[in-house]
Image 1 (cartoon, helix red, strand yellow):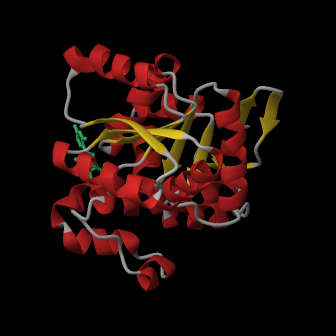
Image 2 (image 1 turned 135 degrees about the horizontal axis):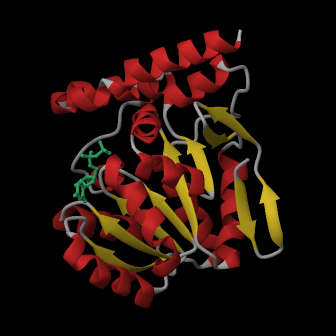
Length: 255
Ligand code: UDP
């Protein structure tokens, strides 16, 4: 069972198991409440916003599965994950999209005077995202910004920069295959309380790309919008039908 480690011991978060990955069943509001306590604890918490591509990556790569197992909280980001929980007869309260969770955390941070650090995406994208977030949430101090294009040799410098900044929230926007293992490997050294991979969110916040219209999100078609806008995503997207097949097969074997 997924656990969130808090100052006052360990609090259990209700989870549903999707192909061996424990996904939180909490809705947005409860998730933000839990993460408020995580910030108060000052201890590192990796939040994974799971979608079918990431779950397939976990089934296929030990590094990704380890990150999932060791994450303090996994939220149902993708419509496919919400669907799978329903298929297995143990549904989640609602979809908790990483993009929305980022904004909800910034809102809570406004009330509580948190600090945030943005790591990832291209230099001009992360700079623009930081400036827009700072305007939108003036009471959350953005204590650091770093683009996401760095190799092993620059790792130590990147980590040190974050440690010095001591952020409450660390948002990491890199590609889904590398961001979670990177956070898992370094979370103890980073000195941030809530560390969350946010994928392409800085691209959207900066205005470089757009999120799907709300009606498409409601129809669970956000993946289709992204695919139509960026056909190069097709190979990655092939994980979606494979995920659905794997869920159907797993469901059948338990019937
Ligand atoms: N990105 C990065 N460093 C990398 C690769 C990607 O910072 O080495 C950034 C990229 O600029 C984008 C974000 O990660 O802002 C998500 O990338 P993409 O959409 O390719 O990944 P996905 O979320 O589809 O896995």
